[in-house]
Length: 119
Length: 109
Picture 1 (tube, rainbow over the protein chains, first blue to last red):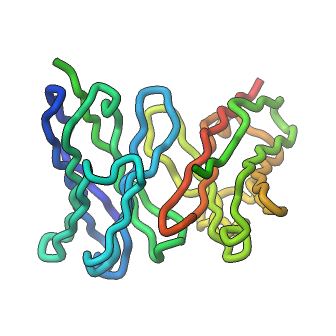
Picture 2 (cartoon, chains in turn orange, cyan):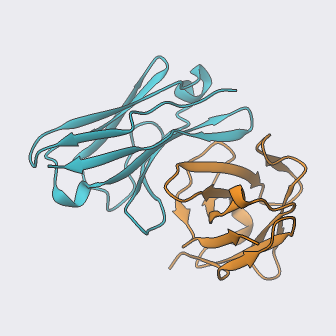
């Protein structure tokens, strides 16, 4: 069955970086785009970026440009998201989700990873 | 910057129908069916509810329907049930990226 299994919760100090993973199984990894979406406590979903099936085209939300890097590794069917220069406002649950096309719906989501930024 | 606007909350009684509007849909997103809706229960990941403006994935109740007119997308929940109490988000593709609405909390009273 389709699975997107995300890495475990992280705690970081302000100014640090975090790299999250999302391992896919149950479908052809190289046929799908992947998004990262975050949700601060009690807040709405916020789109961060998308990577294409070949990993050579990545689009980031303007808000995160320069601070986020999304990559993928087809040898391990894993997508990564690194966020740098962490602030307390980055405390959120981070989700990965797959899509069959650049503009298509996010049809399956990972379970989410809680990132807490606190000194 | 573009934004999708949803009401913060909508409520209804069991058996009633409710509609959640989402304004700010671009003409391209509506024309190419790049509008989708997601349901999120507390403590859970979002789940795809509607795609391609008005299509339902397998397993989603026929009580959920959607439409788009001009720059507004709408989600309708018919025959409201207790299990429909959740947050609902509209989303559209725009300029190579994606927008989410601010979310609507549906309460079954």
